[in-house]
Length: 251
Image 1: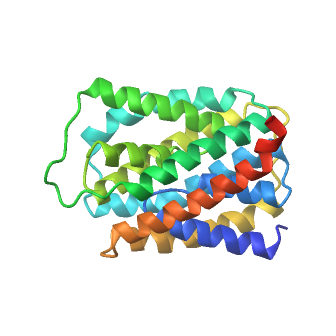
Image 2 (image 1 turned 180 degrees about the vertical axis):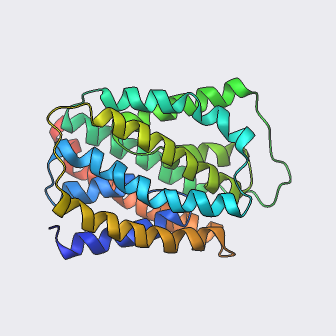
């Protein structure tokens, strides 16, 4: 059984991340490492939690008309197989956490400093090959790190004025769901992977509840800018915590 503190933290992380269309995989990874969970099971556990959290969000965003399937499909058609390949790739623990910490810090800074576009004025449409390139690159990186990739995708879409805040959150949720499934499939190919149900099930229950609450906040009228900045602070804290722990070992 996981410690009660870890279960509660997973609930809070799922609530906050789901409110802006994310799964929370990056923070699950950091928390699992902080609580001494085996490195071999970190990524698969985080991906399972991602899947539980964003599944409800994808359904809610779809029902409320925020998912535009024809625009989203070029982002995911290449990202899914590349996320699977990334999940297959072996990586040393030190370099894994340095990669995770560095990319999360960049994502947090982009989320904080960039204003959210209002309405649909000035939104841009890109050729399919641009979306394929964006989705493929983020998908592979996400598979290696063990997250869904929405935390990387959403700032890129915001910077390029790809869509409205709600449409970007909905797209990020679907992107995370599909990439997490693909990345988990890659992780399951490792023969040394062991997942224990008594430890895993309470965490999945916590993120399910947190994700349901957060998805309703994100799909509702609550200020997306406030949610986005609160999530950026959490991501920055996680990134700095990871780098503080692992960067000295690389120097």
